[in-house]
Image (cartoon, rainbow, N blue to C red; front, top):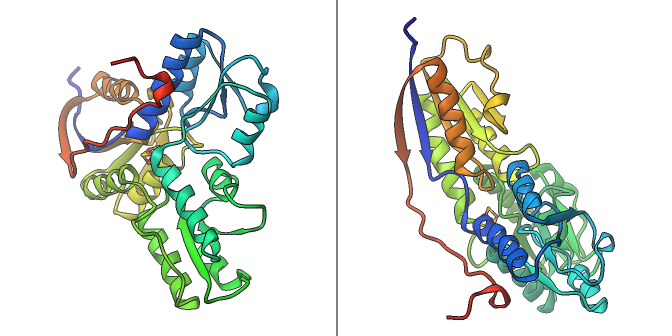
Length: 316
Ligand code: SF4
């Protein structure tokens, strides 16, 4: 039986960003240096496949530092941690390695500088997301006010409307965030924004790539995890940019083939914490059912790389 023809538009860039790549290397190198088990506070990156692979190599994932023994190394996830976490590890004289993405650390430093200058901080982010908890936890409790939507801006209560600054989570929707920033600037005309955009290059590039493939395709599949903020934003960006069927899939086995019945083209991308291996698995699943033509749609070339911390680097 002949297979129906299907065009796969492969968004580029997609998948792993420099911060995720570095965080995974940190765990692997820590296991190499100190042996198993190495404890990791929170999923190092939001992807079950990555977490399971590291678990097999000797990583033990926990949610809180209290769950780690004093005498084993612990690694903090790429999302960043409140200041109280490394402080507690130091108090217990634990070996710890901070795998916070340098672009998240940049936001932490920014928040601290503004606070030192006497400004009250507002954070645009998602309540309960580890990055938001980590960034808000750079300052004493109650010092950073959280807004999630433009509607929140109308009700936020500040100390002094002329002494404010804002930071954002790095993985937000670029377009939605513009609306929230506009609302902040309208209500607080003297509010100070980031020196350079807090939404990171990887989030921005993946959203731009989706904007360019979504209108061409009958469906968009985003390979990523349900708790991955940047992956979920890619689904929303696809839906807002002309793709009626935009879905998150963790693995090929999660594809709803019945929903795709009759389609002629599919756009595929992957969140910043999803390995390319899972994208290939999805492409192979399409090849089994369709006569596939792959078209790569590249909107940016990424060359960003982050060094692993000195304590784990091999001597030159
Ligand atoms: S998505 Fe951006 S901020 Fe998050 S780890 Fe990747 S590069 Fe860093």
